[in-house]
Length: 477
Image 1 (tube, rainbow, N blue to C red):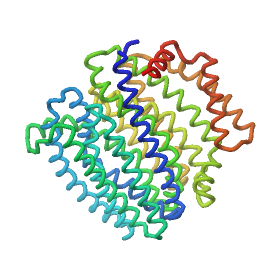
Image 2: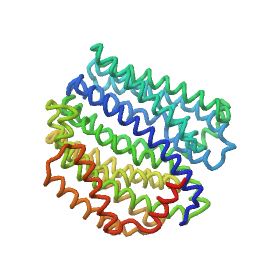
Image 3: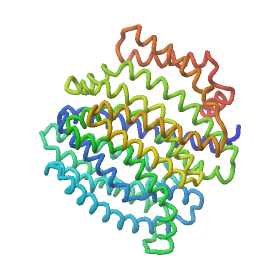
Image 4: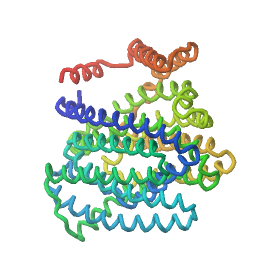
């Protein structure tokens, strides 16, 4: 195999650690979000999710791609960690002040109700705390010490879970739930800071203008790409709030929690693989290509049955989670779930592109699909509301996939993707026929469907000897 086993074991260990943390995170988040949606109702839930989307869009300016740049740069040269992090802390303090000013400005220009403004202000501070936490997570990732990030992730989830249910049991207002996000993010920031001081070289706080100019220039393509990507992903919620109201936002965003639970797979994988890819791009092109090809294969294998299965079970899922008040979300989930196979691939592709230092290309590609998303949403949302926004989201991710795959095929190697799709698609179709034909408990149905799917893949010889050797060696570690 092209990648040495020490590297594979390290990837496996870090993936496993983050995987467990993300499972805890998403299970708890899933549970408290569902109960929060039921408690706040469609419109109230729409206000809160709008606040999160709005501050997330504005919050891109608080980081400007510096955190992901830190992973790439520090992973290649650990000796720069102290000066690098110290300068970034000072830069982010300046950027955070600018960001909060922009949040206040645009919230008032858009003339939102006072309750919405209060929620947005609180969540704006939450977003800034989270941005600083991400900086320290970047250092943990660069050193491949994922256990510290995993503890922070679990700590955040448990405290937010507790705070949400405390607010529900005491019948608190929507502002409380925004405030608990802020409080919890502050505690986790303190935790990550002290871990950083205890385990890593202390940051040397300084204003090195040459460093600032060079790193901001280097991060500028990443920051612009991040701004475009965040706008493309979140702008539909803002447009729905303006054209259709908070009830439409609530019906549209409720299914996202189901999708977010699934997206921990590419998020964990990307966090673990990025420092490895950054090194391999310089030291081992063969290993770099192997990871790229394997990523495509495994993400297709995972994505297709997930999308098909949830499409079939969507009504049961929505009614179990949110009850009849959110019945309008059933079709939204059936549409949005098809972003998952695409996102599994495009998230990995995006990380690979950055590891290759192709930031300028990333800007161009994200700009194209951002403009596509905004333009089509402006045409569709006024007439088709949240259903139109759901279709546009899938189309936008398809455009993103086509663009990324085209360029990576030129830069790395051409992958016969149809060969990776054919057998999983056939296995998925057979699995789907089984799910449609029988009536079982939803959890039993999912278990049997998964067994059928992977049994068919083995029967179809989807997995090569290299795949089985890799699994065997990982199990033996």
